[in-house]
Length: 228
Image 1 (tube, rainbow, N blue to C red):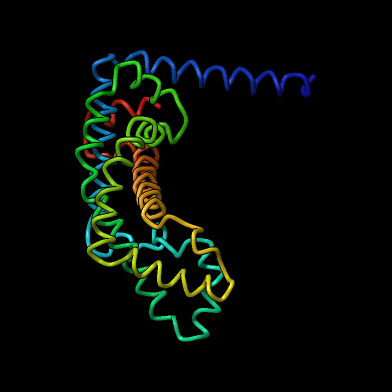
Image 2 (cartoon, rainbow, N blue to C red; image 1 turned 90 degrees about the vertical axis):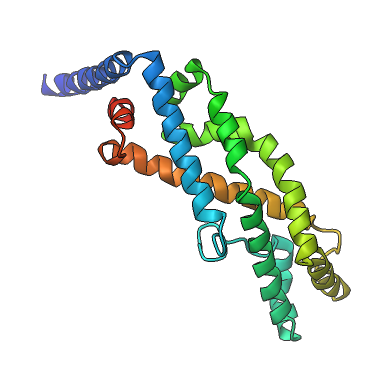
């Protein structure tokens, strides 16, 4: 009998928890849900841009620091053995500074994604997974971010001579038979890594908000995320 009751209690408890969560969300007006999510999105965007869009924002953060492309990582050891370690380090530094320049310009695009969020989007985010805020940003802003970042990265790589450094470095590796010199588009690589870092920082802020809604510093955020 006890064996039969135990699963039943578990099901009842899970059902009650689901109903309680639904009731909590239903008690929040659509306007509050939308406003709360927009505030959360803005909070995540501000954190990500201010954290990464500054000097050494990428280079000083092991979570987002941009390494050499995978193809060059394989060749790096051999190149260092022939005295090209300095060039490798300069290449990494320049890539990361280019990403910082790009992310510093991301705020308007993220703000536009926030403004365009619908009431339905807000409800979907609230009832979605633990990273639904971050996923919304990815859906709504990846394409415009790519369009915005690419010319910024190209300008930065041109100013910092990154493409020239990369071509020289990759060319040396190719001459040694370590990689194909056409193996990577350095501007596309840095652009993608810049976006990856941006979304990672947004995800970290979202995780903190969901874990401690009472410490969000906003009555509206406490109300909306506390209901989850």
